[in-house]
Length: 328
Length: 288
Image (cartoon, rainbow over all chains, first blue to last red; front, side, top):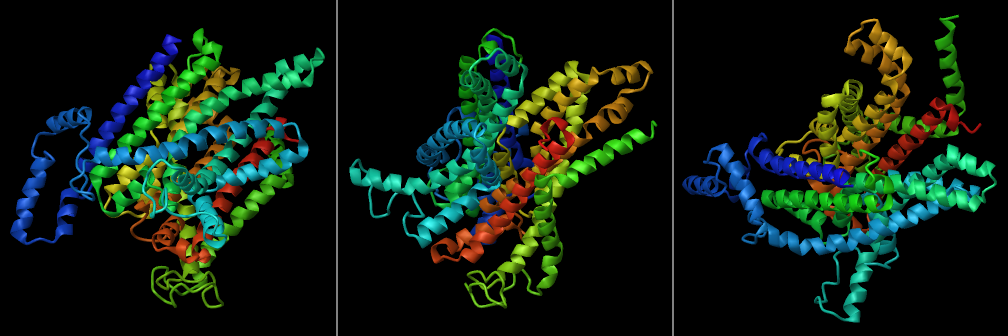
């Protein structure tokens, strides 16, 4: 077990190292010059531009040797200093991100967990009932092929704009102030429903197909056939098949995290939901580079932590990893 | 007799391919959109970005898909956007497959230390969320074209392909015919190219199809966030503009719905084609 988790941890630490390096590298070595871009937005007099340029170069420490810039970058990171936003000047990037993260968790955690459980259940049932299989399978493929934002747009248009059942922007009504009351909680849930549903549906399709295919694969395997020939009740064989099919689905969850996060970003933009995705849109439109870099690091950290959690769950579920029987 | 064998296998594949419903449906949808992408832009003389008509006009005989808030022709944007979609899929998916194949084949065949290093590298890139990396690259590119976008998408999309191909190579390299080639003194590159790769051709085709679809979805998301091409038109960019200019609040469905519907249809058709081809290549999966 120690070897298995240790190996994983090594990969995560290396990944974090690579991610921070990318975060540092790209602004410095990309064609084009962020400082010039920022200066051009102010349209100052020529001499004032010169003063501001030298100020920026000192502020971003671009006058230091590269290795020193790199070390300082790490030091600042460990102090929790991600720079200052230019869009919401002079707020620090970390503070802006901290305000957005709860919305992401509120949207993503229920959507991921519920779609995973529901998809696995329905996929397993579909594998044994023909008519359900014939409807779930095409529907599942259609849902996984759907770009997250498009389903969000369709839902927002149909249920929000045409039917008028749900609000299509924000996390709560502008008329309300965040406080603890039934009125506010209901309002928050009402705004949460559509973004949650669109995320849930796209993910659900993928899990259902995955589970259905795994179950069929397991039922064809040697142990299932052997049990069958012994006259074991079909329900028991299905139970074993389900438990075996569960393992790839847990690994699949770890592999899918990246695209799930991407989908959540796009969904938040559709519903103007004030999480990291919406923040990135604002940062892109206002060319707020520090904010974009901060969001990048946050997403990486979040994905790594989620991966680590899934690894621990996997060790708890699969006894082979505890006995050191599988390398990966 | 020896010459007969491959032809027989090929005609057997063709026999099942022509009779596979999933393959028929998937390829028909793909062909339809491919033709639309090739011919569509020729059917209109409106520039996708020019302000040609009345603003926010619903579909009519003159403007088939209506117009945007500024009076741009949505059909023209759609047809040109389809072209970029196929371009991104082809180039992004192609580069992703190529890198995945190279790394997977070398890691799987050589094994040992090279495999350890390549595998570690693959795992790191696999965990990095692709879109986050693409966002930070695109944010610092002042001028972005569809071609650069495709290249970057390809450069970040290969890890799962490399892992899958590595596993396939592992199982192939211990087979007798590979041992025989090794004993006869062929060099590594020749063995990989002439013994291992041909046995994975069907598998590589499936990988390419999935990479193609993945590149399209990644591009759509990137464009939607506002980091799409600064020159040119794409389906994701259309959706981005539609949301930013309040198509949702104004109920302009003709601007919101078509771009995503096309992406869904194309990527869905790719997945269905993939399942169909899998059934054709893998006799175990044939249900006929």
